[in-house]
Image (tube, rainbow, N blue to C red; front, side):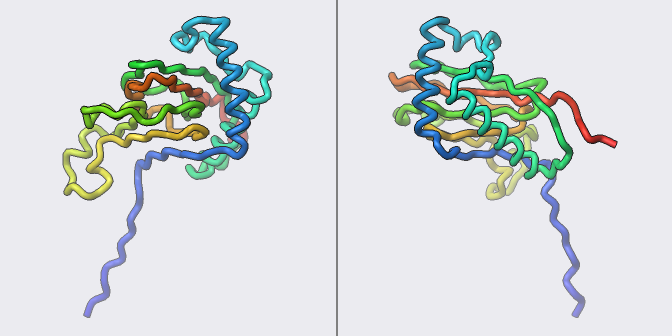
Length: 207
């Protein structure tokens, strides 16, 4: 009897979506919400002018806590990728206040390496007669166009999208080219988040 042929399976082109709840988020969220309320009182509709924001420029204790958590998470993300080369980066961040009906159309984050969102306040999931509405969720889309059209139906490729309804205190991180969208908030409560882009400055330690 001949031996079974040796097979090696390699996972290629993986897409990582990292999710964690940093320790101490409950107390930090109180400070972050108070800081955002103060900012919003000074600059009406600032949430719609996100490019004017520089959220991490503040020395507020809760803001610096969140920046540190994102830095730690980015280092863990890079380790998972197998990146052991020292990198330097900057982080651009802005807050979002989604009121009733507010949403973000499908998009990517150009000129960035990693992107993500921290969830400060999430209203209870709203009911909808439309199963595709996914109120308040964030959805991510398979970057391989059409891959879900040529599957047997049970492998991961069968899903063209992946929807998440994060709870308050959740920190998400993903590769910036990954297309995503935020579905409409159908609650009368505000949905408050803090988004960010990690932008590589240069590669250091290169021989």
